[in-house]
Structure formats: structure tokens, C-alpha cells
Amino acid sequence: MSEPAIAWVPGRDGARLRVRYLRQGRGLPVILVHGVGMALEAWEPQVAVLAANHEVIALDMPGHGGSSLPPADARLSDYSAQVVGLMDALGLSQAVVIGHSMGALVALDVALAHPGRVCGVVALNAVYCRSPEQRAAVEARAAALAEQGAGASHAAAVDRWFGTPVPPALADHAATVLRLLEACDPVGYARTYRLFATSDEAHRANLPSLAVPALFMTADGDPNSTPAMSQAMAAAVPLGRCEVLAGERHMMNLTAPTAVNAALLRFLDGLPAAPAARAARA
Image (cartoon, rainbow, N blue to C red; front, side, top):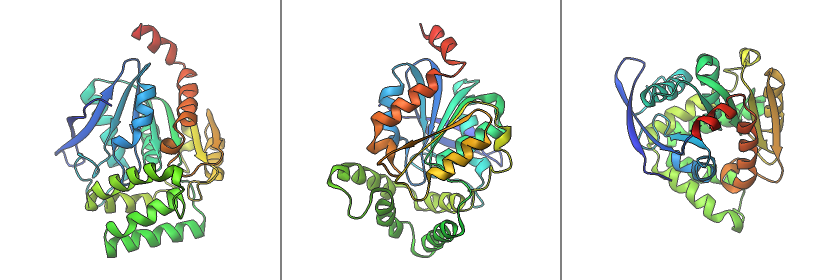
């Protein structure tokens, strides 16, 4: 991965907010938005492959990595505005936006709130219309986070995402994820997780208006971002489709990068904007 840089974008109140990002490759712009507690480094397996034929921009969400904190009353619009602000700062009129977990909510918010700026969207391991049991569990985790602090939740997150005990083959990936969780600003983590816990129905009414091609992809071993969720979202979107990766869990972009990257490349190559971007690159 190339060295990250810093951009400054306007916040909700007009203040200048810091955004840490990396930019690599040439071609159709592709923006990568990570999940709660992660940072742009979580996309390393995707950057390495996608940047061969695309201009890849990975960023730190508000309150993560080197980016400014979100407001205390964080809204999804704060996170999607950060993406659009970075596009403006980099001179990008349009991009494909790919998000993982919380980042998938942000990617969809960008596509729905700023439709002229997005030519395709991918939601990996997204949450949608949780069941009462799922909602109670995530709200309990958010409450425990507020009471006990972020550190208490990191080991539990790794267990949810990789299994207990962590399979030996995934130990290195789990260690990477734990390192990113522990490096995350605890205030940014708490504010973002609270938003994540309450935003699973944020796009329910608007998904049918999403006019760009959309891929919803998850793993059959992800109990919180289930195949049924991705299938329901894809069914609601006019140009939506769903793919389910067998034998994987929540952090499939790290644990199964070959399969995930292949799906992303198929999607990107099938976009109407892709041939023009390839011609411009040539």
C-alpha cells in the first residue's frame, strides 16, 4: 500500500475536519469504507488487487485512524458527507463506493443521498432490518461499551468475527483485527458503534430508489450480517444482486480475499462506466 495522506473537508458545522486516506492506481475511482473499529489498513488485500486497473481511495472513517472525531450526536450523514468531501478535495466527480459492515451503511447513504456522485455501490457484510433478538444483542453491546469502555469489547468482537477459539489458520488475521481495534480512538469507536447499533433500518424506505448497480455480498457464517439481509436488500434495489460466500464469516475481505476480490472485479468490470475508465487509463 502507498503512504496515507491527509485531506481537510467541511464538517456539519462548517469546521474543517481531517481525513486520512490513501490513493493508489489509475482508472475508475473506487472508494473503500471500513467498518467499526477498523482503519484503511483493513483493506490491504483489496487495494493490492483493485489498484492494478482502478484508482483506489481508502479512508479512515470519522473517529478512526487519523480522521477527526464525529460529532457527539453522530449521524450517518456525517459519515457520507466525509466521503463526498474527500471526493471534492481529490477532484473526483463520480466513484464506486464499497463499504464493509458499518462502511456498507455509509456507502449506501452516499449513493442514496448523493446519487449523481456514485456510479455503483457494494455493501459487504451489511446489516439490514435486524430481528428483535439481533437488535437486543447489538443494543446490549452498545450499552456495555458505554459503561465499560471500548477495550472490554475488543476480544468479544474478535470472537464474533472469527469464532471461539480462533482457528489457527485465521490467527494472523485475528491479530491484525485486534491490533486495529486497540488502536482505534475509544470515543470515535463508541460514537460510531452507537450509530451502527441503531441504523439497520436507515435505508429501508429508500432502497427502491437506488438507481445504480449494487452488489450485496456476505458470508454464510456471519450471524449478524446474514445472507437473508443481503438478499432482502438486493431484492429491494432495481439493479441489485446478491452473492453469498460459503464457509466464511464477518471479516471475509481479510480471510477470503481471493474470492472477495474476484467478486469485486466482476462487479466493477460490468459497470457501464468501466470501459470508458479503462480507455481513459490507456
